[in-house]
Amino acid sequence: MGEDGESSKLNHSFLRDYVTEADVISTVEFNQTGDLLATGDKGGRVVIFRREPEVKGEEEELAEAGEYNVYSTFQSHEPDFDYLKSLEIEEKINKIRWLPQQNAAHFLLSTNDKTIKLWKVSERDRRPEGYNLKDEEGRLKDISTVTSLQVPVLKPTDLMVEVRPRRVFSNGHTYHVNSISVNSDGETYLSADDLRINMWHLDITDRSFNIVDIKPVNMEDLTEVITAAEFHPHHCHLFIYSSSKGTLRLCDMRASALCDRHAKIFEEPEDPGNRSFFSEIISSVSDVKFSHSGRYLLTRDYLTVKVWDLNMEKGPVETYQVHEYLRSKLCSLYENDCIFDKFECVWNSTDSVIMTGAYNSFFRMFDRETGRGVTLEAWRESSKPRAVLRTRRVYTGGRRRRGDVGVDSLDFTKKILHMAWHPEENIIAIAATNNLYIFQDRVNSENPENQ
Image 1 (cartoon, rainbow, N blue to C red):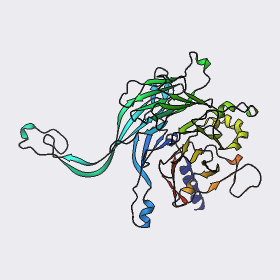
Image 2: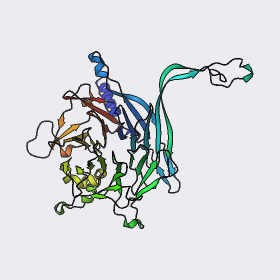
Image 3: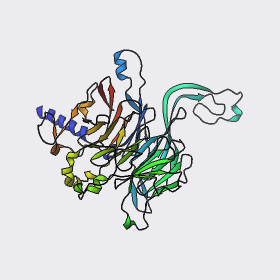
Image 4: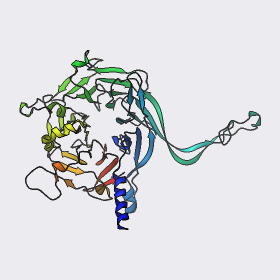
């Protein structure tokens, strides 16, 4: 009996830790109000969570209020094949972006490596009945049997969430799409791949306008690629894009239709003393985000997260070390390809705190006013109701505290790459492989919910 019990525990542990590649979350995004949260995975699926409305009542009711529950799930992309290049096109969802809400329905853009789709998410809680030319099953009646006319009526029915594709934007990119960003005008959006950035109108699917093209005549002369791009939150003519060389280019579409010449370039001079074989790899910018105010830029490279002022191009105004202790491990990280991981970064609603991911299921937050950083962990034990997130520390030398994690003990397969911050409240969504963790700050404590 003891052996059977032990075997049962091992099987349970195996099933709990077993993750199929298709279930790994590849993007997370709140809508403009924060009431909806969308995730995309490597299997091409999109799952939308909706926040339950807050209600006044007993304490038990309040505990459930504000939680995010599954609202809708749909297959956004399917695996495809490029017959001209003999290449498979993965169904993995690279990015999701919500459009500003105009009516009762919600719209979102999702993209894989090649094709961008516009989806409409709407609710239906009534259905029409009493047609004159159709029977109850929807079949057409014999007109000769219709002896009187009646007015169709809408009758209540169970709530149904309908998700329908409204537009498919294809054939716009030769290389893999890494970014999409909705413009503040609400009518256009941009999409970026390794060498080009295109601008689309939401109502026109058969053509786009190329606004950046860094492809050289001879591909052997290629020295950098585009890694991320985003529109300014308030000025529809401005956008930023980052490169694998660690540079940021701010472009103004009022100056030229083709923005090959940037309006401003932001880059940090390299310290010759720190020059190494890995310098160019770790300086590549994996993510760039405008602050909500539009005044600052937030970027993430392999070891640091930086804040830039749009009015100061010579260097970042703030630099935060995410995991400097990995600098001595770059050789092994290069060998296992972890050095090429693309971490995202996000602002809080007031632009006072920034957040980014790390390894071992750790993620980091930095207070811009004090400059202090904190390391937190997204794991199953912290997902229990009313559990409080505890700070973690990586031991790099000196006095070792209880609970510290050694650098050699870090699990590099458990990486926090994708995350999102609620646009108005202190609620964060963290993607850890196939798990989505939602942490909420409630009255001086953080209560996590694991969805």
